[in-house]
Image (cartoon, rainbow, N blue to C red; front, side):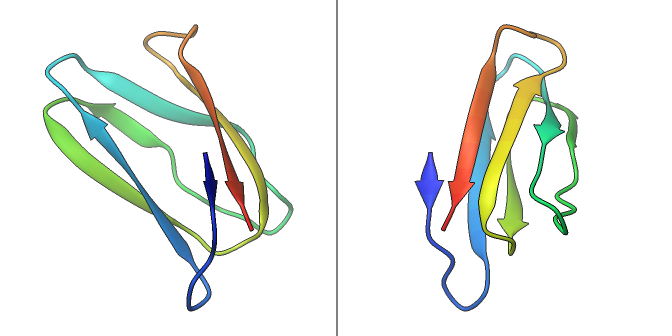
Length: 72
């Protein structure tokens, strides 16, 4: 997913259904400090991205589930 910062940050929201997932970051750009998302189900959780670059993540519960956020 690619997002563009507006006003200094971009917000990305994960929508979790009834199965629990956990977002853990594998890589973030230098200077970024986006927090992991602990085990969550049936909820929406957002994170703000203020540093441009590529952020790679996986689900700790389901390691084959991976993703990337590119912030411009």
